[in-house]
Length: 358
Image (cartoon, rainbow, N blue to C red; front, side, top):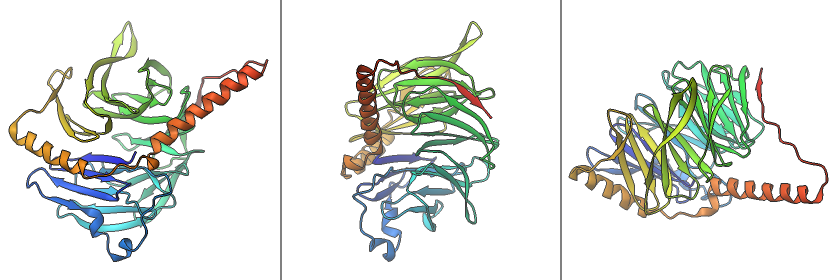
């Protein structure tokens, strides 16, 4: 994705790989600061990377005191103190980041990269686990005992944290890249380029349910006891929840929010769902019954959203660096090759779906 939106209680951050901006908007003061302008003269002298495929990613720590993002130039992880938005440190990455998260309790930065490795950044970067292909999403359990990762090769993996080489489960069955995951209650929810959402038992690794949305899924994000689902090249955001019917847990699609333009990213803070589209920013909240997503309508927030929307319009989106477009096109090419092989071969192609426990 060329754009990334991240929020906490008082701040909305919009970052873009293509134009190399990271705009911090204060919801209290209305001030805007571009973090990339404060990375120093050495950074300014590095040419903008217009060739390598990258993904914009960023995260706030759980307590909101730290913020981390990946600038365009070089393999950097830029860490900031959010009390006064001063630069803490620029850390060097082995490969370009594809996902950044903080551990829920200890504020350790965990980064997944294009090679398929996941590093924890404390005093020194420590490689905690590796996949055979690009990491696309990461989430960490609230007790920090487990880390869940997904990749470009159709796998969801649950590992111990920080000893990530100790694998608990591989959850296998998706038929395309797994673009997003989240921990929802006591389940793992995964979304894929194969158009499906899948619900897995976190403790056993078993597949509990599958829901087709007829369009490749771009991201999956938890909000309260539900999840918001962003689709590839789509104006829709789906809100889903889990429910138990006849002793079986299922996925229920409870609401679809439609916009005038394509959705670029989703962000969550508490019960607030923020949605970034091609030229606007929207804010919703979950009501007390956890059933309906309501749009914030007050005049003050409307003004803030208009300011954020104007910031979005100041960006220039160059889709040649959009990782999700690349993965989608790669998936389509693979399907065409398989279809052609099946037509030219008398031997049927079998696809095995299984879960591995180690």
